[in-house]
Image (cartoon, rainbow, N blue to C red; front, top):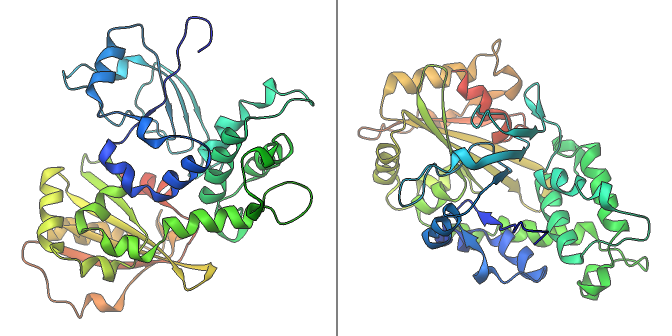
Length: 353
């Protein structure tokens, strides 16, 4: 709390979703955060209390309010005063101050935590140190978002590296981390170790195997609208699309999910690491629709080697022709050659469809 203002972090997901955010959970626990005390946007008691007071909302890592209203259908968007993000601007909340690190189709920082951390710079003097829990929460997320600053994936930027260096040099890490995190005598943590620790939690095979089809869809899901007002969603998963299709209730679940969210088509983006070689990931796209023409048009849009999507290097998988059509559900299986194009790059392309 500063002066008469109280700052309350609220996670823009439901409390039931937190159990699926394994990387975030173990990172926050290592930082000393009691995850049972976190506040989620589906906590109507807290949201209603906030609405009874002077309120300002800052959106972080997204630029459109995830839920437009509380349980009493009171609009929260009018309270958004600031946006800190690195995704394509969806055009919402035009009245507020925006710091969106996205230009010419690409994010100019690999992690939104870099933007958050940059706000520490004016406050730091040479003798100052940063709280180690804050430093680790920022550092761990930046390493995950940038694939450990792997420049082969084009996800890390010089700004991300500058923030990493700032955190390393202005934190007393031994106050937080056990000795296994350190690889040298300089008392700075081993970045490879932190990254692999979080990466293993995120890509854990058993974890994804235990999840239901719908849980896989909902874990990392966002909705958009095309220039022709077609509503669509994009789910990001970390297992092969073929494995997802084998899950119980795939056909019924996908059909119901699209009906429930009023989607004209659904895109499932898959990122899979090949064995232990993190430098050789594989990206797949699974496009689903109940309208065959919409599906064919979307697929042709992506496969156009001379259009806006050519840089994605999309090709059709050969097993499309070998699979009998599902009843009332049409799909296309595609491979994406451009490994650096994540959802934040692809989503704006789809909106042009």
